[in-house]
Each structure stands twice: as C-alpha cells, then as structure tokens.
Image (cartoon, rainbow, N blue to C red):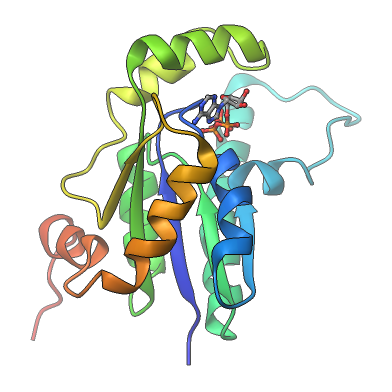
Length: 188
Ligand SMILES: Nc1ncnc2c1ncn2[C@@H]1O[C@H](COP(=O)(O)OP(=O)(O)OP(=O)(O)O)[C@@H](O)[C@H]1O
C-alpha cells in the first residue's frame, strides 16, 4: 500500500513551512514533512569551480526532479509525506503529475494577499524581493482539494482546517483532474 501525499502549494512567504510544522501533530498517523528547501539544504555550497548560469539552472532542475522522485520513493514504501513546494513553473507540475501517477495526492492551496506576502517577505529578509509576487501569479492550477488563506489566519488554525478537511476529500482529486487536463492520454 502506497503512502498518502499532501502537497502544500503556494507562493513564497504564504506560510507553507509554518503550516507543515503545525500539521504534523494534528494527524492521526506518523507523517514525514519534507519541504523542497530541505533537499536543497543538503547540497554542497562550496565547490572547486564556479558554475555558470546555465549550470546553476540545470542543477536546480535536477534538484527539483530529484525531490519529486524522493517523495515518490518514500510513499512507494508506504510512508505518508507532506510536501512544501510552490508549483511556480509549469514543468514542476507536469513532472509531478507523471512521477506521482497512482499515488493518493491531496493538493492544498495556501493563499495569502499580495500586500501581506510583500510585508512578510520584507520582514524575513531572506528571500529575494519580489519572489512572492512573481510566484503568486502562477501558483494556482484550477480547483485544489483544500484551500486555506493565511492572510488573517494563523498557521495553527490553517493546519487545523486541513486536518479536519483531509478525510472528507473524495476522488477524483485535483491531481487526477489536472492529469486528465494536462498530460497526453496513453494510446490504447
Ligand atoms: N499565517 C501567518 N500569519 C502571519 N505570519 C505568517 C503566517 N504564516 C507564515 N508567516 C510568516 O511568514 C514568513 C514565511 O513563512 P513560511 O516560511 O512558513 O512561508 P513559506 O510559504 O514556506 O515560504 P518559502 O516558500 O519562501 O519557504 C515567516 O516569517 C512566518 O513566520
């Protein structure tokens, strides 16, 4: 039996990581919380040569493709996994739809107003200015399974909403609908 996957999708600073941490103790079973950033953080930051821009871009694509497959590998052994990951490029979504075919994925959209995103981005100071706004334009991909809005709601309350709604989500789930819409159908 494969594990379940919850994908927290939202712009930078929308509150995905905060919700992920708050959600773990509210779930009845042991889940892994694996933010995409955790994979990047395991990569060496010092090398014997300097990568050019194209090599850096390749490395980031490899890292993200690896993240998708690492989550699938854990879930294939029956582990339940929460992902913290903005679907901010179309290829991320299509690669995930392919990689996670056959898995039970619940897509949670983490929303936040543009003004509050910019306030948080300025306050934390560890993200490039404008990242949140650029991602907020492209992170929605139709109707999610669950949506929370962190503009005026704490991460703990958003996590409680997700924990309550999770058992009520029925197929076809957002990933199944997106797969039908975005991936070419296999020939008979
Ligand atoms: N519901 C909330 N209300 C107020 N502040 C929040 C809320 N959620 C998160 N924050 C604050 O916003 C900042 C970003 O939060 P967090 O790291 O959870 O966002 P994220 O979506 O995971 O961002 P990124 O994708 O850039 O890693 C943090 O300083 C956090 O304390």
